[in-house]
Amino acid sequence: MQVVVVGNADAQIEGLLKQPGRTVVWLGEAQAATRKPAPGDVVVIDVRGREHLPSFVAPLTSSATEVGFVLLCSKLDPGLMLEAMRVGVRECVAEPLDAQELEAAIARVTVKHRIDGAVFAFVGAKGGVGTTTTAVNVALELSQVAPKQTLLIDLHLSNGDAGLFLGEDPRFSVVDALDNAARLDQAFFGSLVVRSKGRLDLLASPDAAVAPPADSARIRTLLEFAASHYRYTVLDVPRSESAALEALDAVSRVVIVANQEVPTVRSAGRMAARLRQRYGKERVSLVITRYDPKAEIGQDDIEKTVGSRVRHLVPSDYRRAVEALNDGKPLSLDNHNSLAGAFRSIARDLAGVRSSDSPDKGTGRLFGFLGGRRN
Image (cartoon, rainbow, N blue to C red; front, side):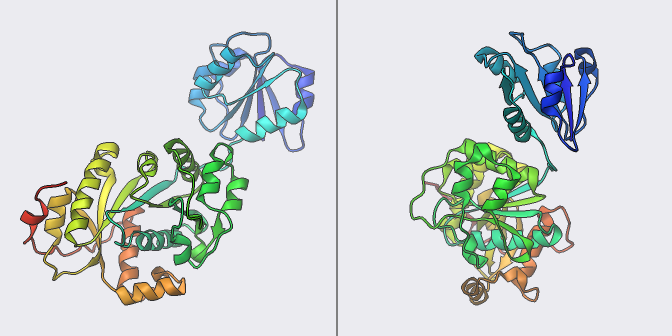
């Protein structure tokens, strides 16, 4: 690690910062204004004896987003700390300087192997449409593309089933992550997830019947952390959890899961309208599960009612799906079935790997009924 100290050379600071494997570099303020630190560096800015931040700090922090910043100050002055927070400096260490306190601050701002991963959210138009089945199996398919770099988060705050689908009974859950959102780091987060089948990491739902409500801010923090440490993150989102539905800013695609039942399609239309308004039309798509090409409600009917193109059709195979759930062995681990093929197609689409296959459209006989009055 390289620590860049901005300020006049100080033997006390140098002694506090010296560690095996660490390089300490001193820069004057004029140099700091023109020299951009390298990703992974930690910059210590010495403003002791000042009441305000020097003018170079704001441009420096905005241009070096992969760098950690620590401020050294004479005292923890609220005005100075507020200035620091506004420009992205999250750690302030006041005199008398202490080696342990300084090291703890450096550890908290150290950026390690951060990536810009994709996050995909699956939310059901109604209960029982196969949202968890879809999320789990798509996550497994993505984990074949990025082993040990794919994460599945069950955002149900109680009694979610993603762990059951994977045959896992984790000790910790998403509630533990949300309760400690302010202290998330790789080591702590690694203690919460389990490495499941297909080299997929799982952050499960708790078994408790009642969990405290989560606020959108903590969910956003969790999702941003996941996106910075995993290539792919898949979310199983409860449709009834408004805080979760309002915290999907970091999500690349929101996938609404529905089937060919009239109440479900109408609910999908309402949900799609809400999500398109919140996140934009291009980020919302639709998947139809248990698809029956002979059903009265065809693909055209669904698309006209929901206002979104159906990107994928998942065939109906109830017996095989129930057997997979009972065995704790997801369908995607069996390559020789149509359901696994459908989940693989969804994963390829989300990952940007285009398939030449496109679903056949169904008939359009019931649009008048589906597009009727909405409650």
